[in-house]
View (cartoon, rainbow, N blue to C red):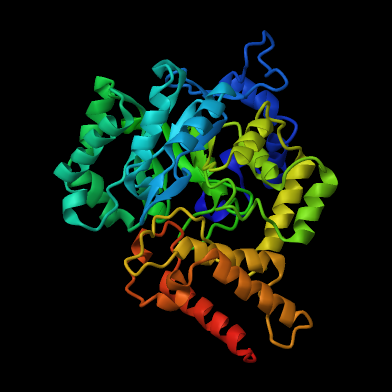
Length: 462
């Protein structure tokens, strides 16, 4: 597929109508034939109420279509320190395991460096052959000691200790593409780290080697050009019905990323199926369109069905901090009901409508955190986006509902973000910008939100 065809072509050069047919009624058959989706029935079809699995063609792993993203484990306060609530994590993992979820994705960077240890403790209580662990070479720090060979290998060995394992099922070069080819070469070529990881795969300490992608498409294309040599076992990309065509910042539309992987039959791991939660909390007029079609289904389930309906998708990650979210996602994939052609077209039309909103493309990944000046960057953006979706960001002080929107925004802001962590405390140090996978100009957005808040407080016209 040529780059210029991105807007009109899907995977393997299909036009959009042909692609929607694959995404629709034919997807169940395609997924079954490619991956052997099964829950133990002779027909190869999942039993009602049982998890859908996809088979990794290179290893034979039967991976649950729902993967557990361990980026947002629940936390609690111990004095002035925020720690992971290990008891809650154990309960969530136990419930997930009991309902067929067997893929757990973490990183040395998640939850301020606490996720791997908490995940290891929770999973150690289950037989090792019952789950797959994914973690990452998260040497994105600008500190040369962190991204050096010694620093990266020290992080790698620490992952084994924190996860309490002697092999890692799925290991990723983390968020490649940010910083372009120069940064990628510093992190993996010049220090010999990629050669080291390939040898670790040969030795069996890594069972599957892949990468997660954000940013400069030249890095993605370069790594796929080396596929015949390296033989990537999987690749993790951001995929949802908005990013399919409208990827934000420096990111590339999912249509191109998925198409290139599908042509090579490289299993796809999906991140951000909900686009940082934005696709679980749609503007009322859009949510109503989905509720009219499936009154009993959650808004989030549509996004999960979308991601799971692609036949080359191995698993779809969700960072589930609450049991009700875990239960809803399990229900969606037990078993998966693939989207029809009509439903896919509906979601794409909704994506077109959503692009008219002035929301900020934050996915709450927390890579920008901690802020050295204490700002709750994801919390600020989350409140702003929520108010955009709910109509509480007036375009003018002359709007008929200005007073209602003003009150809702200001009261909600103080409730959701402590005052000392709000946008007015940003000094524009730019330390966060380098780490943002969505390429958001965070200081500029903070200035924009701070001015908007001050205008609301003062009742100024805008």
